[in-house]
Amino acid sequence: MLQQLRFEEELRSADEIKIPKGIQLSAKEMTMAVELIKKHSGKFDISKYQDEYKKELMKIIRSKASGKKIARKKLEVVYTKKDDLVEQLKASLSKTSKKRAS
Picture 1 (cartoon, rainbow, N blue to C red):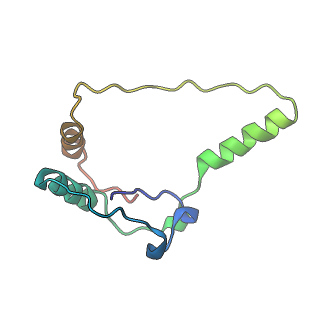
Picture 2 (picture 1 turned 90 degrees about the vertical axis):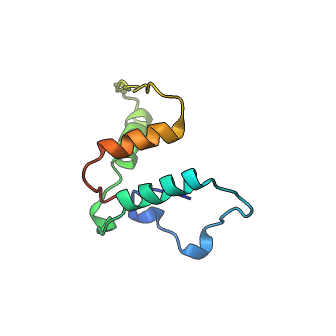
Picture 3 (picture 1 turned 135 degrees about the horizontal axis):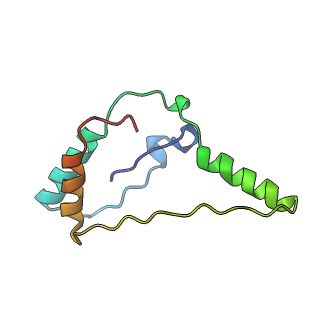
């Protein structure tokens, strides 16, 4: 199970995590999972990160509650050329040259 934590309030104790039993992984999937974990692992202080999404959402809620009209931001959709998830992950791993803290 690969889970990216983003903010301090998302941390849970290991006892709270319910891992499904009886799941079979292929060697290819396991290798990819281990590579992803190694690539994205590192020491960092999670308290330095702020939940910008939550702040912006609360701003929108307060504005709407006071009757103001909200300007919407356009989303940018990025399409990939490959359908195979493993191939997409391999491509993303080869593009990432430095470790990320999150």
